[in-house]
Image (cartoon, rainbow, N blue to C red; front, side):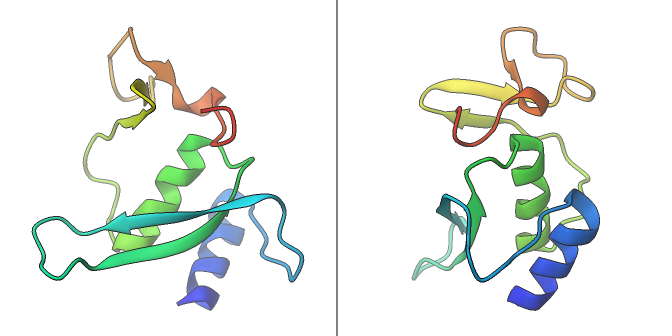
Length: 100
């Protein structure tokens, strides 16, 4: 799984995995309505933009980017304004995980 994810991230959003990780966080993506809880867990760099985190989630879940999405972090909403008309939300293209 790590080799596949690493290849995807490298080709699609320019992230490279090395032995010396930059400052990072574990990102956990649990599946809803499943008992016991099942989740995909990946380490992502803190400098990743939220739009890049969206790509990571798509890869982890095997999704094809066919639905609108919205991040809510500490009560603040972030969207891709190119596809989602929500003026009160921040632009995910301009925000990194560390800043959010």
